[in-house]
Length: 322
Length: 300
Image (cartoon, rainbow over all chains, first blue to last red; front, side):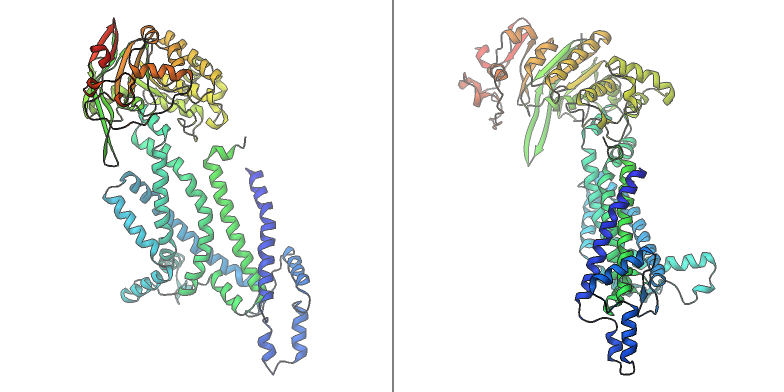
């Protein structure tokens, strides 16, 4: 198992290099850079600008710039953000944590619903409950996330039950520890709902199909013939085997969550990576873009690694290579 | 003594709004301690019969009696589970890939024996010995074993609660010839040791000849001929049986099952010796002692 994880981590290095190289390339291809704002400002002297250029290596050729960035990265330095006037690491570390909180809460919310709903739909196959769930999931799948966000925000304005934006209330610092958690959860509800609904609808259908396939297999028929209880057949044999493809999807879902989170973060004003990345790209804040893309990619690779480890943990065929 | 009999068993399915008569009045009997063969082409209803005996399909008409108890009634299901077991065609699909061999066998054992895992260890080792496997298999997962070994595990699992009847649904069809013959030998040995009755379902007439004592030939949901193996193999009567024997020497081509007008002999459209009388339902006829056929050619 350790071997497996180590191998996967090593494989992710060239992947990260590729991602960062392309990102670097695309920002450089786009005309202008962050200093253009300063260049237009008549109060800033040419000397100051060339000083900045030297300091941030913007006067060097593209490949040298990239190499310098990698060199600094190895030393643990992510560079300096022009717009925040602070080290990139400091800007994105709290943002990455916020995005992680949002992603994990939607992940948990999704999985709490997917498995019971999928099982219910499979057991009530072609009956009213199944058809209702199928109908509702088509509605859920076809509702655009941004529209749902506005709908929920509209509801929240009327009922005044939930906060409309941000991650904390104004008086957050004055709350007790439990109060802080409660406040965070209240702020989490709308973005979590928006992020989870689509995947709940899709995955619930996939879960249903997988379970039906597992229930139709020969070892299930054999288990019935041996007189095992229905609960044991369903939960121990069928569900365990139906869950495999779902865990694989879990890895992909992580990437979807990160990009989906960006959209929701921007609408709701959740101070996460997505928001900061968008701002950084707009203002061509080179090192901040690089830092947040790197962070997002690392989160994604970790998510995939986690799903692979889970898969190996539940499936002996993957665990024992031979 | 018959351990199991079916009376006028009818199982219908609706498929694409069409009624498929999977079993259309099947009468069979299984002699205790012997092997009864059930042969016929794919789709003729062999597996449906097995599933109906196990209580997975409820018959539209007719009954299944196990030692004079009607097991087609839901309340007698426990009797089926205790006494009848099944071994399927494909051992790769009939074992849960997530379970070690120990868990697979222990789970089956635990249904009727309230034994702790440690107590069951010796029983499981013994049953593996009976199917000629080493006890070291217990810690393996199904994907680490070969097809032949897996089929032995399936047989061990069927055997573990000492049933009186085991249905073998094409148990050798997915194995190579040498492995298949070893399995056949093992089955015969187990029968001699425990007096188990087998219902051996197959389309392989050579294997059936080796292992069975009584043969039933099935076509389109109906029994067309049955009798002691020697008589049936020596003197096949029904045109379909003859075709099967001819085909066994080459390759059997599956024939499309055309809708025959109700009441007619199902084999009528393909029969070389068909006549106008075949448009009526054929009656059972004892051509020689204990050798029966459902064919107009013999009732005339």
